[in-house]
Image 1 (tube, rainbow, N blue to C red):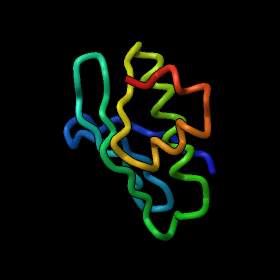
Image 2: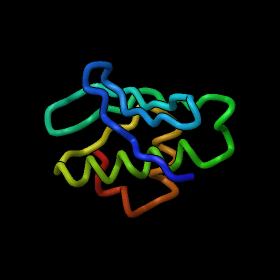
Image 3: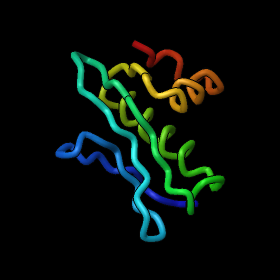
Image 4: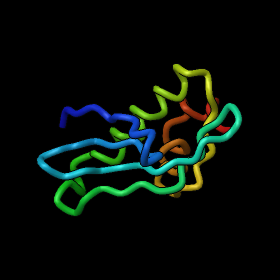
Length: 91
């Protein structure tokens, strides 16, 4: 599934608009880090890799900005645990 994850700064969440639905990751800003608090994928999009693709895209954006990530969301924490190339981003 091909889509882009956008940063909705006003709502403090990363969003992906797919098939008329919105998947999102809520966050809080910290000093030199982003705290990801919650990830939600609509039921209609579950099992299609949307959550994992969103996490990967967001982590790459965080890395490009030279920031760290603090995953308070278990889905994001699990993703980083399974993908060691992102462990260097942990705050």
